[in-house]
Length: 343
Image 1 (tube, rainbow, N blue to C red):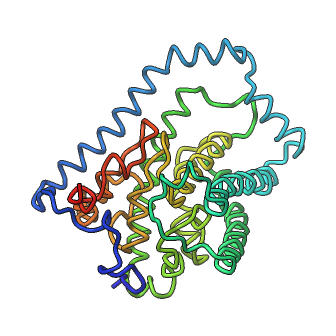
Image 2: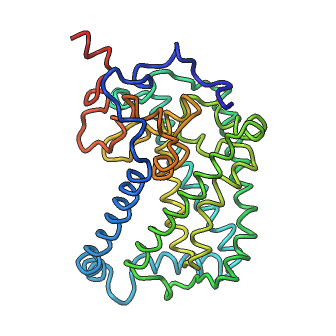
């Protein structure tokens, strides 16, 4: 249904083909593996909260001062100093202006890698093909700017919902470090559910050809195309899944802003096309852009539960889908079968 313009089987790179070695059984209990992944993510998050509770918080308080942290000072300057304590303007124009700059700073970093092609970065490139050209890039920039304006418009009803949930703004009401970590865990789970099902729905034939097909014009994505999408897709697949969590939790706007920055960074990396050391792996979503199938979520939990990673787990890309803790590229750690045979 969605394989309208994906890369053909004959043109697939070796890492995207089924491995010649033994692969996981099709009959593996998907519920069990999904549960393992879920509890691993939540367990490590809670462990981090527990370990950070005393030591890290103490160091933060000692460093910034128990009475007023640097973050409070910055937030006070932005909210009261620049916007005069006007909640509506701050929650709409202020937050979106910051996210606009943050988005393009992330994008410029990856665009530098794509345009300048520094030697150190090329060995980390997931797909060797280069779809970047001036016309296509300018179109992507134009669509991204339109969608950022749409996000600004969406912030108006989100502000109203936040008011109903008693969202706070004042620097003195900034939450504790531990509570922020707890809320981030909740946000991550809500985003996984919201993005997975909205994204999978976007691949329905009646929706895909009119809406989601635009996003898949890039079979070898670059970072800024994370919001290169139809306006409706941008609202329901990009904006809402990350906004629902802070609304439900009635979070301080500073926590919501931190969360938005985390998600922007994450999606830039997922679409960036480079599997860089010490950063989350983009292999899963890159495979999705190449094949238009599998890997609809962000964490992979619901993909495992629903079996929508059944093709991906048979490929070399799945083996490479790890965080690199050294400088060796994933292609060297997990070389293609063809390379192994030639030795």
